[in-house]
Image 1 (tube, one colour):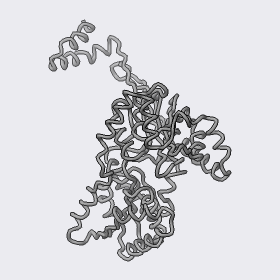
Image 2 (cartoon, one colour):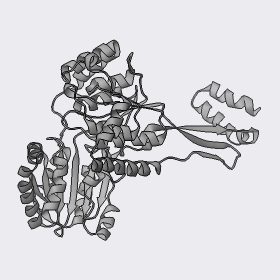
Image 3 (tube, helix red, strand yellow):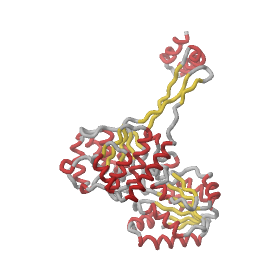
Length: 430
């Protein structure tokens, strides 16, 4: 864990190193993924069966390629009542939040009489990738499926690996709540390739969303253009800005909530009190051995964690913007949280006040937890309804409006050396 002090000489260089750290997998997976994609495109289902046997250790033909809606419904009914209620609460809140994101069509006439506007439509089919390796996340099922449903996507396909042939009943229950149409027991880059190109069994989709390992992320990157994607996501990250009025053990738990995801995850604390920084560091050390994810957290905290002391909490915000974190907690009084938030330019999602832990956002808050990582919040946003929709503009002119704007189009076409463009307009004008 790095300990930095903004008032010390050399801080700028140390912070630059922190900002520029590359935490993605060290393995060069690009060539491997390209080979997998090419094989799935050429061989289809045969390639999927072979990769599943190799990586997930079961036979798709013997165990079944898909998970039925009936199996998902049975998994839902078999859940403990409190867990079923929790999933339903999460689904209701996620659905409501995303319903408010639906864009409005536009249709109007300008001063020339020209009719202009745009119409929004959902894509025909969306693919959702749900990990099944290190951890299986039913919350991610809801976060990916429900915005697609709200957008009006007619066919939603879920890809999820089932190592050893074992399915996760809570993931299946979440799929039931979300209303997924197809579930295929396939993971990795090969699953993304199947969604992009289709096979004899699996029809292609228009958009692929959802988290995954380095191979899945690289497959999405390589296949962008064949299909739409939400983002190329990397390791999870959290930045907490906290004063000394917080309980150190609470802030420590917030930091560890992301460290437990993966050894490459990152947790960073900004505070204006050196003694509080020491207390949080001690609380982290106390909590790690007592949690079941201790091994992962230990590696993440030691390799990527940081505590940074700044003269005032306001000084932390420009530094946070440079990090452009996936999650940003402003653990201060409500009024100060609002004041700090007003200065934030780059963050995937922001959690305001002492009683708003990031972990709430992972499950039941409503905003999407699929967020840009690796400083990509500088130019991208979290998953939303618009990722499953596209906008079609339209224009309608009459003689009056064409006469008003057409001569300018003729002039510009001539300047660009495109006489047919000019002729297309000028013949109507005459």
